[in-house]
Amino acid sequence: MSHGSGKDEALLSDRTTFFASPIARQASEDEDLVHFLVVTEGLEPGHIVELGERALTVGRTPPADIVLADFEVSRAHCRVDLYRGELIVTDLNSTNGTYVDGSKVNGSAAMKPGSTLQVGRHVLRHARRSRRELDHSRELDRSLERASQYVQSLLPQPIASGVVRTDWMLLPSVRLGGDAFGYQWLDADAFAMYLLDVSGHGAESAMLAVSVLNVIRKTALPRTDFREPEQVLAELNNMFPMESHGSMFFTMWYGVYQPSTRTLRYASAGHHPAYLVASDRLTSMPLVTPSLGIGMMDATPYEAQSTTVPLNATLYIFSDGVFEVLLPNGTRWTLDDFLPLLSAPRQAGVTEPRRLYEHVHRMARRGPLDDDFSLLTLDFG
Image (cartoon, rainbow, N blue to C red; front, side, top):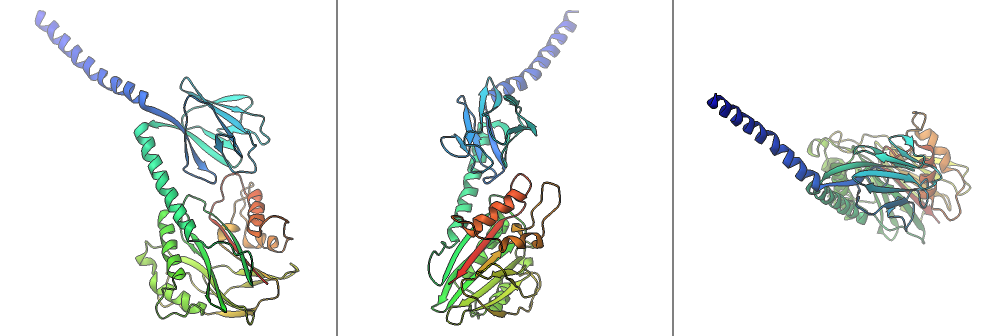
């Protein structure tokens, strides 16, 4: 009897030890858990905001603690407050409302880990992780931000005066996109302009776009006269076969303008047309040459064409993310839906890329656009 009781006590002791260990570990982990909001849709996807004892306001401009540059966000839109381990969201009489998991907040509402907060066109997800996991996420976020800044640093500054004036907008659909563009004087009478769109999204697409961009910026293609668009595309096709670059290819539009004759020579590789719009906004000329994207097939032939540029005309070069947008009713825009915007009147005090982006953004469903928005305009005096 005494022996059996001892055995039972030993078993009970073993069981107690077995169950106590994870409970102790869980208590330790709970003390180290951090609440935060991570942007899943918006201009800065992946951006992390740590939550603490102090309540934070969300708004379009400072002095809001969490600034979301979104015209659908009020200056003081809502407040998030971590109270006794629970995240509380309070709407601050915003114009367009605050939503938690799709339901409009009337007053205040609680957000569980995994819940989403929608403010304008931005969506933020409530998460809870250990301090170590959060620090790791932040380091990845900083790395992506540095990579994004590097891509931006390769893009040329807008040109405000001269025989060719330029402006542009690039908004990746994720932190790193596959679009890139540029322009530069090749000599005193040859101004090159180009835009490329790499298949896919993310770091791999961005790396390929940067590689191509650097080659063109440095005019580093062998046996190539950069004043001849068809030669540029053909040599890029030789240099970047898709089987050597993660099965990725890219489309491209490349042109060279000669001010002395007002001649624009251009070629495209699997890319939709660029459009030359007259100063009276009444005519719009598509500029395209048919061919496959770069990297898809060896020895692809490319051809160039020429056109005369009217006085004060504007050239629009853009990626398909500008017009392939999903509407709130579930249908998708096409190029034909977008084209009337090019001939619409300019807006005083607003650049052409900004005017077009804001119109597309208003038409599209809530959230970020599905693809990178890249649009380059060139005004010819």
